[in-house]
Length: 221
Ligand code: URA
Image (cartoon, rainbow, N blue to C red; front, side, top):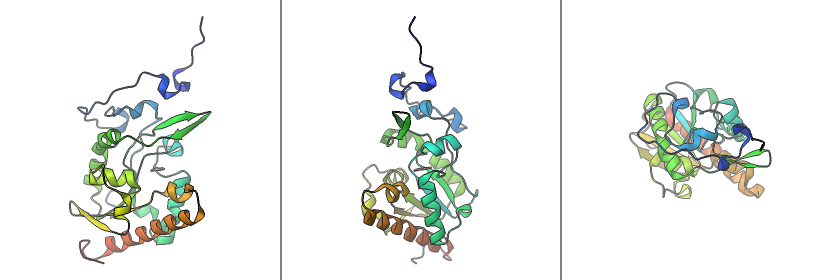
């Protein structure tokens, strides 16, 4: 008889792909079947932070560490983000941190689970959860960390991060700022690029703090 590989050890591609179900309106992330990413993830990773934080940070999707821990930005990118927040004078405990996509998308490489960029359809399907967080937290300022977050927030798959760096965009009465994803500041090939990306993240977080604490968030700073 042929030896069977336990389902949890099989590469994602070897399993039958689950479908999208955009008619589903789940109450919890664990129930979510709106896109197929739940299938290969350990768990959904919801946003974390104060219920009415004035600043919301939006990343791309949980990484390997976040998938295991069930919390956003707790791995290497999260440590860089913590440094940048400290340098910008923003307490991590005062911001709501979340992701555009709530399940880890990965492909196997040897024994490692390598990050795979979510498809636009998956980002769109997960906007359901981001909408709920935006409504519940109602932040004055949202910082898009990277291009996936920016596209998700603006609901514009053609939005380009470069066009939004250093600029503020008004969206449904809120301000959106955009900067590089922390992983880019960690992994860009040369140190100059990494330093510039990190500096822009710090600058943008400090900008978000100024706007959040301005008498009216719509006033120019
Ligand atoms: N990268 C993200 O975009 N989000 C996380 O939570 C961790 C890494």
